[in-house]
Length: 176
Image (cartoon, rainbow, N blue to C red; front, top):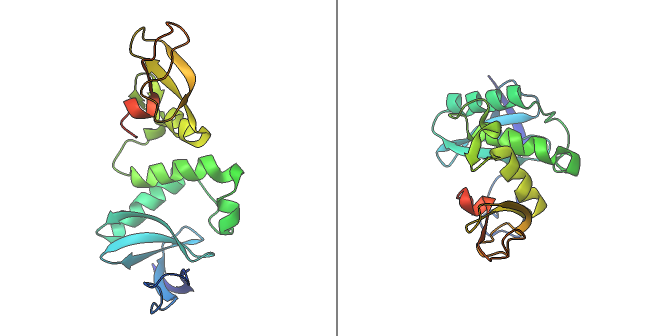
């Protein structure tokens, strides 16, 4: 790994950032556009072009952090050399979400996003519900699955049995 110098993004309105040096040293580890560095005892990934922290998962060693990043990049390749605005754009939203899950779930199976989490919903389904702001729900009275419920719903109306016993998939999965 090669040491590289770059500038971290600092919030000028933050009193905690007032005395921080924007110049930092990280390590190029093989994914162009990303660097790994130690911050407050843990290793994190920085997006070099913007200077913002890309991801952190409280890794104690650089090797663990790099291994998780390389695994995520192999599963969901992203061009990290582009600007922050491009990465946060609508067309990158899903792939960045999956990359993050693969990075954070480095100890999980390689098919983490496709595994069933709750009922018949996969992590990918639950992520889609989160993006849309509405989720499918399961009726506690008749067991029917219906859509377009608030993501935190626990007492929505069921169109099949006319009772208010629908719970959102995100609540059932324990994500909310």
